[in-house]
Length: 251
Ligand code: PEP
Image (cartoon, rainbow, N blue to C red; front, side, top):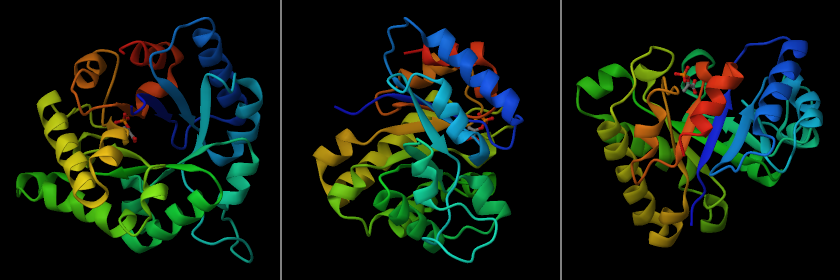
């Protein structure tokens, strides 16, 4: 059966010292806890190795928030999937709407990043989601489907089964406007059906589909209680250990 996951996305927040302190605090809160989901923290690149060194790897997985679309070489400022893997990270967030919007990440670039992540044994947490205008124009199903098809449907069934999806309606990210549980469930069911049509029911049933967009301790339980919502990708609320723990405890 598919795993439930609560994954934090710290984005570009926290100095190294602050990040290590937050990771230690989360680690401390999870000590002795009976977890009903996997926990992942997505840190800036420079925190990865240090954070991996202070958390219990049996309880907390580490994720990068991006990786390069090239293997290695003269790409100043880039960080490859192999480098991410070498820090102790086991996941990488790819296709976040902020990277698509501000850094021009196209479906084609993301396809390459996914392939390189998988080649380096990193599990992509692949983000998809429509902007407000696309929701208002009633084209959100088509938009999300094409994001999946264009970047992921070239994968073998074996490789696809390593992907975690995160449905993040862009209008809900960092805005305090959460999708209603019904809107989240409707889209998650559609995503699972789309996967089933390509890879069959077994792979679709085993795919973890996270919800992201202003999830917090007050709304997580209701969101996670939907049959096709398998956890969350959490931005703002993952920067406070107690809030992150409360979301984890919503399972
Ligand atoms: C995100 O950026 O992945 C996210 C879900 O952010 P927030 O929870 O702050 O809306």
